[in-house]
Structure formats: structure tokens, C-alpha cells
Image (cartoon, rainbow, N blue to C red; front, side, top):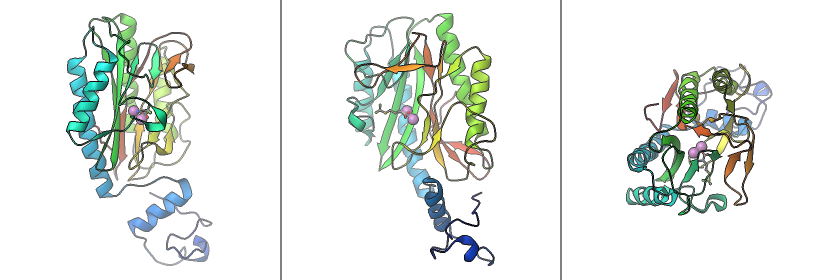
Length: 293
Ligand code: MF3
Ligand code: CO
Ligand code: CO
């Protein structure tokens, strides 16, 4: 639960320090007062039941779109075809593809093939071939709320290396999700992922991290996929953020291509990723973009 420190502004809104105001009184604060205090302190927007409902509805559309992509992806298809599929399905279901024009991103979805870590730009020139792996990262705005999830797919029959990196990325996310509960800290999530992925001989990308989400695509808190146990802010009910580990078969280093978006591994090794949007509940977590990992 939110702990108010002696020197924090009092949640009652008096403008006094907590110790000079309500600390020694028997007063309880409304959800809104607590959320405001939390925002002032950490810039984290705790979600209301209405917000959560909205994100969940967007999440269902994201997952349906991901499954559609999974059914359609075949050798010979281009990443532009995936873009068209995602764009048309999203719009025809009342959603807006959040990536389109986001900070200048030119397409409606990110499609990241083989050594592309993330933010791959769909193109007619990128033709999927047997043995490729492709991550499809979908963020949809529905009735003002964002949900963000991704999966890495096999294109036809794949190498043992491809199978390994996809398995380790999937399992990294799967192990991190149950760590989400009140009282645990942000660092516990990264620690769990790093320990597992490095134990499998893979590496964790540092340059891109998970993020809070809601009415905004990216907001506080930051969620690194590496780190130390029992560090960082405490998880509290009402937080919504993504966990989206990017795992490389070789080194963890990335560089961005001249298109200003496409992030690739510097050593050319394969990279895979899975992402979900997750709510901290009173007792643990709820995945707001539920799909089977
Ligand atoms: N969906 C990505 C994420 O998981 C962000 C993509 S930003 C874009 O945070 F502009 F490339 F769409
Ligand atoms: Co995403
Ligand atoms: Co994300």
C-alpha cells in the first residue's frame, strides 16, 4: 500500500506537510486523495476501476489482432502486409493504431525480424522467409485507453537457435508476471528476468524497457528487465505497466539504423520479445492483454 512519509505533502490537500497536518489524526483518505499523493510523489497515475475497464477492452482488441497475425504469417508475406492487416482490423473494430505518427513513427505496428530487437518499420521490401522469426508489437487506443502487447512468431520451420531465443524470451515474461504483487518492488521484476535469461546463456537488452500505460502510450513507471532484488519503487494496487523483455542470443548491445527507429543487435545475433500489459491488484496481478504464454 502507499506509504506517506512525514515530509510528504498531506493527502488532504491542505498544502501542509503530512507531519504538520493529518499524520497524528485518525483520518482516512479517499482513493482520489491517495492517487493524487502518489502522482505528486512518483508521477505514477494509479488507475480507477473505470480506467482499468477501458484498458482491458483495448487489451482484448490487441490480443485478437495478435492472434489474427499469428494465423496469417507465412513465408512470402511482407511486413507491409502485417501492417495492413493490423491497421484494417484495428480501425474496423473502432480502435486507433497508436504507433502511427507517434513521435514520427510512420506505420501502424512494429514488425521486428531476426536481429531486429524492436521498432522495426513495416516495408514492402521485407519479405518473410522460411526460418525467420518476427515480432509483432501492437498498441491500440480504444475509447481513449491504450493497451500494448507483442508476440514473436516463427515463419515456417525454424532453426534450433530461433526456437531457443523465442522460448527464453517467452519464459522470461512468464516468470516475471507472478512477481507482480503489492509489496514487491520494480527491481524484483528485472532481477527475475535477468537471472533466468542469463542462466540460459542469453542476454537482456538494457536500452529499451517496460513502461506505465493508460491514457498515455508511455508513462511512469519505468520497468527495466534487469536489476537487483528489493530495489526501486514498491508496487501498489492500481498501477498498470508493461513487461516486455527483449532477449538476445549474443550480446545485449543495440544500435539504431539510419531510419531512426529500427533497433538491431550490434553482433547480428537473434533477438526475441514478448510483452503484456499488467495491472497490480490488491492480491497480485491481472494481465489486461491476456494470451497464453
Ligand atoms: N509498442 C512499443 C512498446 O512496447 C513502442 C513502439 S513506439 C512506436 O513500448 F512508435 F514505434 F510505435
Ligand atoms: Co509494445
Ligand atoms: Co510497450
